[in-house]
Image 1 (cartoon, rainbow, N blue to C red):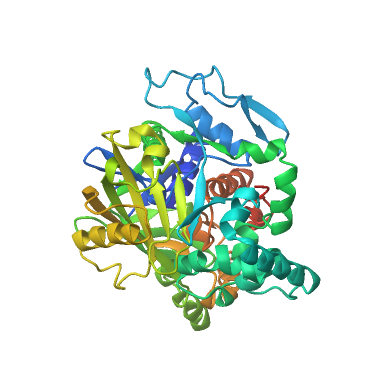
Image 2 (tube, helix red, strand yellow):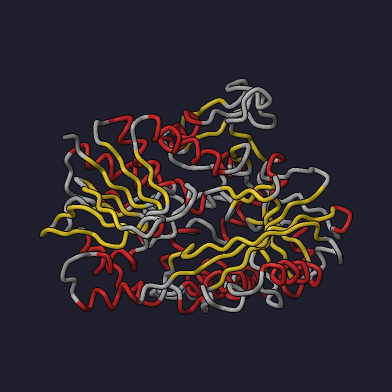
Length: 505
């Protein structure tokens, strides 16, 4: 009998693991997915011919392995204008994107090369993001605020906060208190629903560890070639879900099994091994699945409660107290004539404390094929919330009107702009770096004892991974299994030593 790898979750990590098993071994992957579609938070949702990318997913990575994987499955469009190549810092090699791959008019399965633009909206004005302290920015800030920012930064440079334990201290050490309050505090606290002084500095170290006022000023005068590279990125013609739907098709056609609507809620344990999983099916019946290896992307909070063994009470208290941030996006189809300012961004960070909206995506600018009628503007207004709160439970029509009203209030939309709308809610979109997270290592140590259990992906590791990081955790887990390697520390090392994509910008 061939060996089986049971994989909980058919998002990027789960699908990557399944694909790797099939291409490199005789191990059969079986994926159990509780939702009705694959891709997890990287799926693409369609509404009346308009497509929504939940969260916005640039296909940019510092990993050669991930980029090669993407381009093998979905080649770049032919004749990409404006850039000759994407350089890879890891090995300093290049993959030419010009003149390779099918014409997008001949084949829909292509990566588009897109120009990245994102801005901050603060005090009813637009500022570049990543922040550039150029003449335009200084004029918008005004001389008094600019002077306060510089003096504040000098104070922080001379009197660095040590030890650096909170996210607020992380920001102040790199930008000074004034710039932190101006450009980082409001948006970050919208995301997490908690003060920055209560969030671990580890989040900043993971996500923006290379960004600082010193580097921002340096790049004003010395823009390196590496900096310009992340001003462009690859993107599937029909959104990120297009890639993951294709990967799922490849998994199925190669002998893998993907079962939808299966909620894994009991892990069968024998000593230090997982024997299998019991899951609730869409028809209400329970099914059992044998596992030689198990890879889990389910939230750690749920995983700990699913273990069919005597878990120490103090560990359950920690896992039960793990916190997450939920997310919803209001998809608004707009009359272009009702826009009060041009929106040529991929996304806009809304640093305005008088509105609840946190970020604005403009899907037309990710790919023109994301919108059915290119004479309209298709946007997503993002809200970071908690399941059951007032935003989460708001009626869909009311929420659409509320979202448009917020954009009207801050001067982005005129009245009567909405032509159509839809609301998407995403549970546990962001594992939180506060509360019981300070004791997460105790959970990790306990779960690592199960020899054939591998935690991968964002919620599987309770880590704010990007898509490429989640894929790398899955690839590394498969590497370990095929090599017979018991030590799992290399999986946990992914996205701790790597530089995040926003660095050097």
